[in-house]
Image 1 (cartoon, helix red, strand yellow):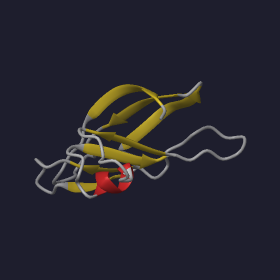
Image 2 (tube, rainbow, N blue to C red):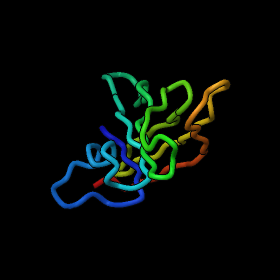
Image 3 (cartoon, rainbow, N blue to C red):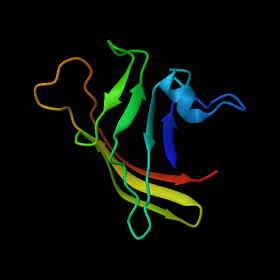
Image 4 (spheres, rainbow, N blue to C red):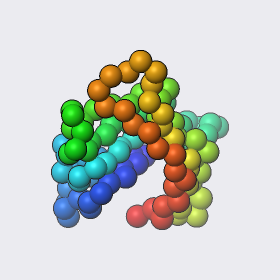
Length: 106
């Protein structure tokens, strides 16, 4: 599953993850979520992000700094806790957020 959180909706017929990484959705985050048989959902690969006001308008936040926790998919609804903290000693773009997600799936 691919999770895309964005400022704008993609145009009809456009794949949201591609539009996100190309900066077409304004500020956005996208992540690939995996679920192996007998395991919980996980995001071990981190996030791609774009934001037009950043020094470098797009980048990547690895799973050690951007975490998607308590992922659940039940009854057509996705929920999780999303948190990111700047990595000590990093330069350039720094992401910091802490939010609970609850989204009806399409």
